[in-house]
Image (cartoon, rainbow, N blue to C red):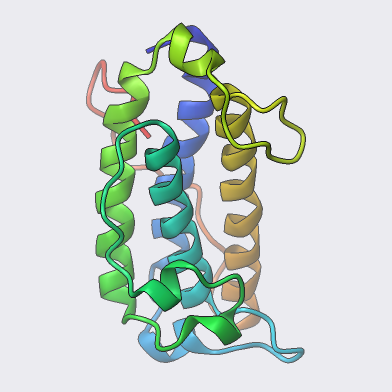
Length: 171
């Protein structure tokens, strides 16, 4: 793995598991529930994060077809999303794109990191800048999901992580 992205890959890897921890004990009704003020639901945020990781795979030149309908894939808000998949389907989609992203991140090289990429907040318009912003974006929405979990009366998200295989990095 390129040394410049080792910490970013670690954030993606941690966020992959923390999202699963946030969804522990959550049923479809709670996942779809919107808090007062018409906040996004957990289900929408999970779908959005999954789509963002699909976008990142595309930026890195290894797209994976979106599992979601075009309306959900392009939604910028829950009101544009249409029906959301059940939580089990969202988890499955999250795990697939996260595993795919882990493999891609292992193979990124200096030339690719320096290529022009989408101009994102706080980035200089390179692929590396896009990776950095999207790692922050992942974390931002993960915090929202953790807060919504508590607002729905569930225990706090845990930082418990499964044992890792020796020598494995990935997202």
